[in-house]
Image (cartoon, rainbow, N blue to C red; front, side, top):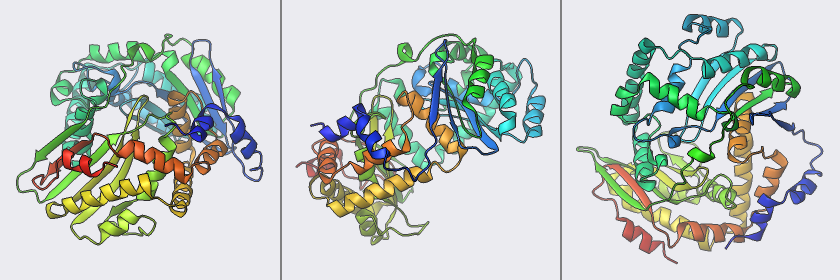
Length: 456
C-alpha cells in the first residue's frame, strides 16, 4: 500500500510550507527558475559571495544510446575541451586559466554535465565558453584518435576496480534488453569504432533546448544569467527527452564471475528500487542510513549501525556499503560488499536479518536517529556552490523543480516507524533478487536460498 503521508508530501506543498514558516531563524536561498521560449530552463540560487558555479545539465547519458553508439555521450565529454570553431585547445585552456576558472564535465547513465567554477564577475565568459564547447566543438579526427586511446586506458582502469565491475554487470542483467543496462564508457569495440559522425549525430539528436538546464549558484543574479542563456543558448534546436526515452523493467538475475586464485568475494545483493520521484524513495534512504556502512581498512565509528557492529566482529568481512540508485523510472537498492570467501555466508545472513528487522521490528529510536543522520548527510553534501549547482541541475531534470530544504526536512521528519516497516516489507521481503558476485564465488548462496529466508 502507498502510505497516505508520503503521497501527500509529494503531491501537496501546503503542509510543508506551513511547517517551513516556523523556520524563520534559518536562511534558505530561493531557487529561481525561468523557462525561455525555446524550452531551455535557467535556475539560480544567489548566496551573495564573489564566486559561483555555473553549468549545463543535459538529459542525455548512456541510457539514450544503442548497441552501436554506446559510449558516445562519454566520448563527447572527452572531446569538449579539444577546441572549437572559435578557440583552439591551447587558447581555450589559456582563457580558462587567465580568468582563474575551473572547467569540468562528467557523464552518467542519465545525464551529461559541463560546468565552470569561476569568479562572479566572469559569468559571461564562463557561459560563453560552456556554450562554445557544447555547440561548436570541432571534433577533429586527430583529437578523436588521441581521446580514443585515453578512454581505452580509462576502461582498463575501470576493469581493475571490482566495485565498478560488479555494478556494471548488475545493470547489464537487471535491466537486460534496455539501454539502462549499457555501461557509460561503452564496449571496447565501440570505443575503437566510434566515429566523428556518431558524435555529431548524438549532439543533433540530444543537445536540445527542452533537455537542458543552465544552473548556477553563488554570487549570481538571476536576470543576468537569464540574459546570458538567451544570448548563448537562445538558438538551440527545440526538443525534449520524451521521444528518446525507453522505460526500463527490472529483471531478477544471478551472476557469478569466478576469478582464479582470488580469495575475496566482491558482490552486490539488490532488489528493485525506486525512481527519483517515487513516494518511497526518502523512506528507503532513511532505511539505508540505519543500515550504515563499514570499511575495515578505513576504521572509524559504526555505533549507529546494528549491521556494522555485527559484521565488524567477523574479521573476514572487509566492507559493506548500502546503495539506493535511482533513475527516472526505476532503481536498484541493496548492499555492496567485499569479504573473504569463508565469511560470505555469515555476511549474507546478517543482511537478511537486518532487512527483516527493518520490515517487522525496527523501533522508533532507530528511525529517529536514521532521519537525523540522513538529513545531516544531505545538507553536508550541499556545502559549496558546486554541489548546490549539481543539486539544482539534477533536480530540475528529474523532478522539474528544486525541492527546498525546508520541504526536504519536513518530508524526512514526517516518516514514521510504520512508514519504514511498510516500505521495507514491500521492498525487501517476498521479492526476487538481482545479485552479482566477482572473485571467490564458490561459497556464495544461491538467490533461491536468500529469497526463501526473506519471506514473511
